[in-house]
Length: 180
Ligand SMILES: CC(C)(COP(=O)(O)OP(=O)(O)OC[C@H]1O[C@@H](n2cnc3c(N)ncnc32)[C@H](O)[C@@H]1OP(=O)(O)O)[C@@H](O)C(=O)NCCC(=O)NCCS
Image (cartoon, rainbow, N blue to C red; front, side, top):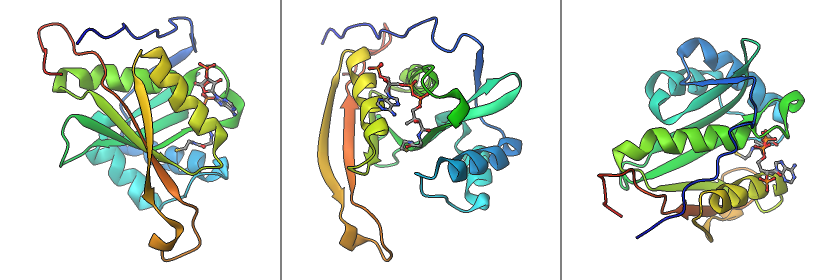
């Protein structure tokens, strides 16, 4: 299948540096998640562990030497062509500059050589910014985005909104890897 080339804006976030997270970044990821007031804030331990064991499927953005955004994800064990994005957050001071989109594009590009062609994430229905982010990601990569129910409020042991599953893909394959 011929896919459109992703339209990554090369001038987006020109002062940012993107890299894989390290254990020392775990504190900052936890702080950004907590400050977002939107994300589920997981234990500080989980962010450190994520930086250690899921660094290849996660990414951070630095501006002036400070981590200002992150994407945490994993390649699904039962669907190795799919990156599941667990959390995305950008520090309030750096939003609207294309950082989140740039991190997601870079992560998908880095995983393309492992035949990752799809991205999944869950979004609660009232998170308009997140829905806009992933809708724009699909559009700019020239691929589709679909939505289905995943977790109902009754599935949770505490008060929690529904989480709807968004599936983006297929992404184009790098040349010489025509598996889609
Ligand atoms: C969602 C979030 C990560 C976006 O980060 P960002 O760096 O500002 O996003 P970008 O600048 O890369 O924007 C990417 C796209 O999303 C859209 N978007 C981003 N924030 C938006 C908002 N608040 N309302 C509407 N659209 C928004 C942008 O317009 C852009 O779309 P476009 O290409 O059509 O113009 C950031 O607002 C955030 O950290 N929110 C709190 C945590 C959260 O909700 N995370 C997502 C759930 S895991």
